[in-house]
Figure 1 (tube, rainbow, N blue to C red):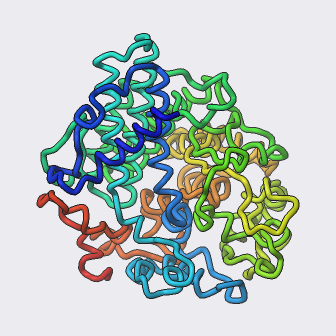
Figure 2 (cartoon, one colour; figure 1 turned 90 degrees about the horizontal axis):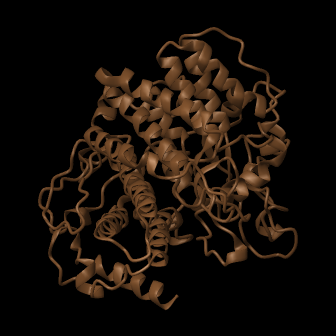
Length: 510
């Protein structure tokens, strides 16, 4: 434990020393530690957990999932009768894409309740994780005592996953990013086109994919540590993102996504749990989890009080004390919920929501995240749930989308109905073509509601350009100028004159 603590402090210090004026302020690990840290398999495992914690730290320092993936298309409203209501009005500013107001520190969500939204604009922690993964891969190639060749390759696959996941998150937030994979990088580089970056990540992950097990028999690390299913999911997600921005090669991306989806299903390493067992899924470490940031109060996990999306959409008795949680802080528009859940046979309605699913006020509750609520006590705490990154159900639908784009409608419908069957909803029985594609989009919106995918699906499919799909429509001009991104913090230019900030936001967000 002392070794882990010392290494963690050294790793953090390597990114923070003000005397270092090189690119990203990085000091070589061996200069700080005497090159003595990676002396056993246990050291490698501890390092992998530390890298994962760095990425989770970005989720935990603000209301990340909601702010980046759920609210920016206008489906969510705040409840004016809730406790500290003005501090939750940020959801409607996000819904109008008014990020500059959201980032203004004079508003209640910064002064009354500190949501720390400016942290979303800061990419440095992602590069800390990337640098740490690069160093780990280099040290494994040098050789670590007690690590076999098979173990080395599996550890490298985990490190490559964390590295590529960091790049993927940044691409969806900022667009173009600086890309590098060498261990002790110090040369300033310009931001690279994000399609190129993701293609490099895909090629990198392909070299590691088959060197790691599909999943783990140890239930304590299932979904928590990256596995082949995690890597497959990430490659699928990156392919589908690129398909939306590189139309000349779209079919290549669709075909690879479809093939990987079939491979994922054929592995039989994962399964859709019955909807009646949803509490097991959202608790974490289930057979449905491909990758997650597992959190449990039993382990003393310290979540920021504002980071879980459950905080916005539940009230007493799932949130306590009663006098400050008589209504939810926010709700999904009833009109939007009608679009998603017209089929009354869908068991997700009763499993994931309260009876006021179309309430258009604070009576609405998203019980999808309230399955593991505290039964007693008056503490102001969120339910004890995990932060899901990739889930089996989401990747099945992503493969279905790719198949539909390829015109393989029968296979696409088969996959869609896997999700419908689990939800005990009526099977899809419509036609192919655009009707099927639209249905799959809505099915992803249903299945993944609150998991932080909806806005990114709107962006990559360009549905954000149509009022049929979004309350916050971006014009083609705004979209092409990067209105879908987040502003990039000016600290990205520290010691790197080649970095330029996001023009759309530098020019006032209009």
